[in-house]
Amino acid sequence: MSRGSFPAPGRAARAIRITAPGRVEIADIPVREPGPGEVRVALGAGGICGTDLHVYRGAAGVLPIVPGHDVAGVIESVGAGVESPQPGTRVTIDPAACCARAAVPGALCGACARGDTHLCAAATYMGMTAPGAFAEAVVVPARRAIPLPDSVSDATATVLEPVAVGLHLREQIADRPGAALVIGGGPIGIVAACLLARDGRRVALVEPLERRRIAARRCGVTDVRTPEETGADPWCVIVETSGHPSAAALIERTVRPGGTVVLVGGAVEVSAVTILTREIEVRAAKGGRGLYPEAIAAVAAGEVDPGPLITHHAPAGCAAEAFALISTSPDRVVRAVLDLSDWRGDAHILDTKGSR
Image (cartoon, rainbow, N blue to C red; front, side, top):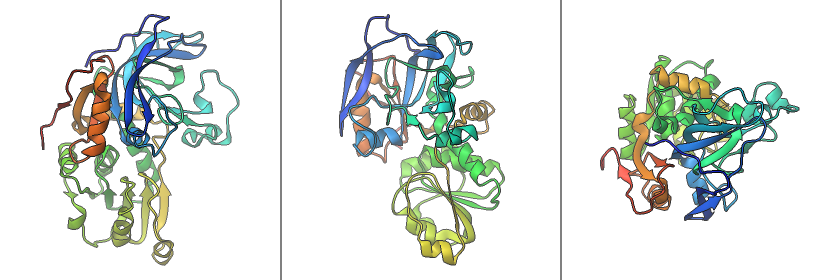
């Protein structure tokens, strides 16, 4: 995948915009110089994730908006006071804006002051509540531009957020040993299963779609099953990453008395009666908690390989077709990556893993 090149100052940059539910277009956005504490990133790759799909369907965000936050690119220029990263540095971007990572530091909210930046009272999120990064370039605070080693490709960098989320949820249950059942075989669920297995836990992943089960096995998950193949055997820890309402019944069937449920994928309701009568502890893992440096280190060290999650590549100019494919054919796509340096609209979406 080619590296991004920033448009000359004074010329608009091309960007992907979701203008209405199900409608994607290529538009021009203004180009500006980075201000104090900011960097300008020429983007090369962007991964379409579940949040982007919610925005595309009109279920999240405020339209119209430039979507996207799982990206990689190169620092093109820096503003006053920026010592690192410098121009030419490959980076990914932490999509969560918080008062602790502002371009110009100021007063911190209570959450940021105690290190819980993912719970910032003033947080915004690229591509959902703030303009996203599916464009030729973007300007962000230097603190949110995270350098990438040569061993982590641009495409792989677009799947770093699931690794950060997986590391966060692993922190959330570090004091709860035992076997773990992961519900949902999207990128977050697959990465979570890989990380928990490395901790020495017995891990199983439940996923109804065959393509995702195949991706999980390629990533190293050994026990991959369908919901129908999952009986009522009790599990110490349930990690819910799907956000699907049907997960509630599976949780109630499989969580052991005194067990722990970690909600990652969304608002899946666990019965209060089940919580009370079985003394279930419910926890949550919201986002990646800023663990991008740790996620990069985990990938670079071979602790987890998210590369097999990428099933499709497409030029940015084919974004409308890519979003439509993911929305209508979830059984075919695990993760699609856009080449943000290629804005041809007459190219094709490449299925990199074959029909199966």
